[in-house]
Amino acid sequence: MSEWIEVSDRVYHRRYDPLDISVSVVEGVDGLLLVDTRCNPREADEIRSDVAELNSLPIRWVANTHAHYDHSFGNQRFPDAEIIGHHLVPKHFAEYEQPRLDAWTENPSAYPQYDWHGVELTAPTVLVSSIHELDLGNRVVRFHPLSPGHTDTDLVVEVPDAATWLVGDIIEQSGPPMYGSGSFPLDWPGVLDRLAEFIAPGDVLIPGHGSPVDRAFLVDQAAVLHVVADSIRSSFEQSESVESASERVASVSRLPLEIVESGVLRGYTLLASAGPARS
Image (cartoon, rainbow, N blue to C red; front, side):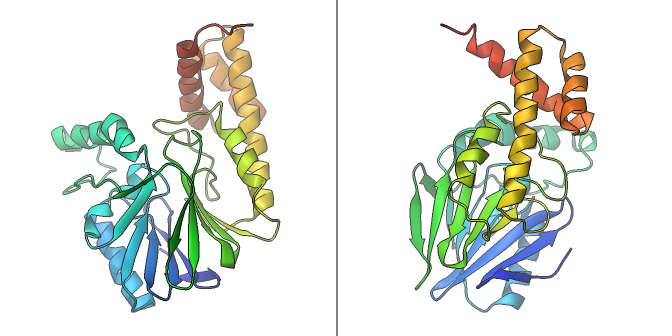
């Protein structure tokens, strides 16, 4: 676990183990915006304690950069805050996170790496489907719901007066990009291309895991994701097996095989469900 770092004017970032999760705080005159709540109530309580040491202002708002458990399962510990998230978070909870939580509850020994005891899924109270602005008190932040990429619940938090973007897992710094539950590996790189059009070279980007980066890092990661997406399409068109395609994608993208396997499987599933292309 790191300490709070002020990465730009009154925007603070801290990295938490396990999973090297980014948690950020944006300070306004009227209170604090907390971005992401970690994996469970105990980890959320740790955030609450650390924020209290950082700043005496109340946490009035919470945002989830996406629906995955490591960024949203601490929501329940902020009952007095307005929780902001992508409008598809409740649907994603029902399709992916609740079944994951149920599986742990039924057989905790099968998932010893997870600590989900006492988790009560708590969806955002403000569901965002278009650009949404929030005044923190003499400071406006913008929430950008993205098209499907890392998930279909990705939400970017922009702090315009600090030239800072809190982007969640659409980019990863301390590890490779993850094709987790509900990912869209074929569309993900295009999402980054479009976002890059709004980001200046000197802007600060805080990824979901790892250290702050810049626009160039996002562009470089988009290029890798393009290689993956193009290779998945090519392998599917050639009717390669998932195993063979995964090895090829790992080779050309230089990403770990265990990472790209899930991306290939998900890509194949999406391509098969789309049916034959029409001219």
